Length: 246
Image (cartoon, rainbow, N blue to C red; front, top):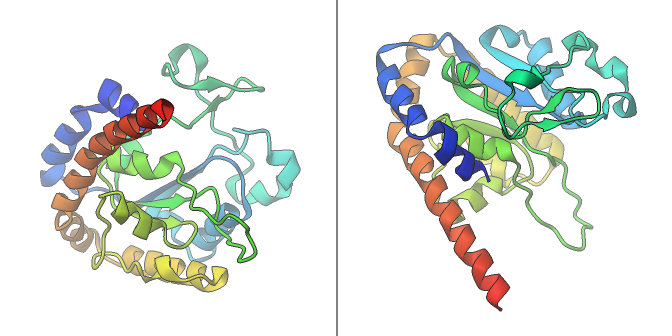
């Protein structure tokens, strides 16, 4: 789905903007967006706030996207001023989904301006904690991973362990040694979270000039993932058709 949207609305424009942006520095270190409120996402926002890191990036929350605000407690959103982001329906893009309160789910929307105003993405997976007692362990991929590839951004992902390992098995490249990705193999939830936070703090301590060089040193990786997303999409189509035949 995300690659279909990429082909219809974003290609080759994202690649053109990316290449032409080499002569311009970006004002922010990171961009972070979440939708459904979950404990690890709220913890991430509180971490950014407590460490005065919001000045280094932009973080937004579609807290009404799935009608979970009351369920999770309105008080948890005080750090964000209890504000919900909404799309204007007459101007919304065709894949936005109307919701119960006239807001629009952000699943397929990409804030291109925010992405190209920052150097890396802080992604929050739908699932963070793992339970060793799960009968059928699995890794869940949400849309945010693919969006970062469409906008050619490196990322740190706050999610289940081994998600980066799986991405590499799918033919994508990750960002070691530019990003310390040792967190990906850590099963302990608290330890994994702390390693992620340490790396975010390290990256946010870099000057914009250093971050700009750091970013462009990854150009080949970012372009590879941008192109690989389309290849991977077609492979999925073929696998699905074969499954139907069987």
